[in-house]
Length: 145
View 1 (cartoon, one colour):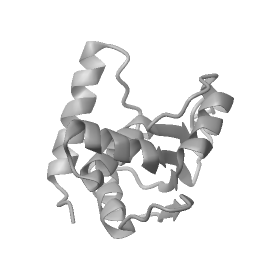
View 2 (cartoon, one colour):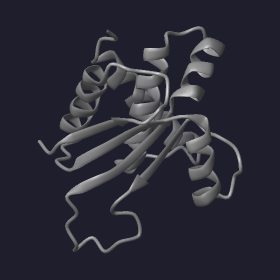
View 3 (cartoon, helix red, strand yellow):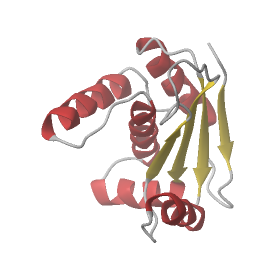
View 4 (spheres, rainbow, N blue to C red):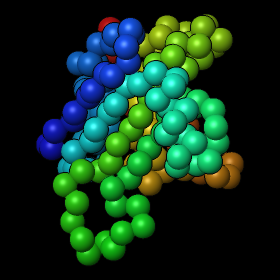
């Protein structure tokens, strides 16, 4: 298994990195993927800047994934699968809005971002159904601590 690096650069909010690391590792193992992953936990301001730069949307969002292999030749081997950025501020708001624990919402966003790196998407109803089922499956496999 390649390393799972988690960096929390949020100025205030802290999280339990171990449970996130276990979640990522479990998903990578189940999907038979051996590349490393970087998970970066940020605030709304940082996320808004990323979203503006890479999608043209000048607002924050909950999760953004940047795949190392996207648009690159399949013949080239990359050690990393990619980067997942999660706004802890947005995760907290969504947890409050949906009536779930912050840790649960954070894990959902991490799983969602990782599934995007693994090639899953939700551009149509069929893809969305597959992706949501995988999220539920993988989140049930890890206990929220």
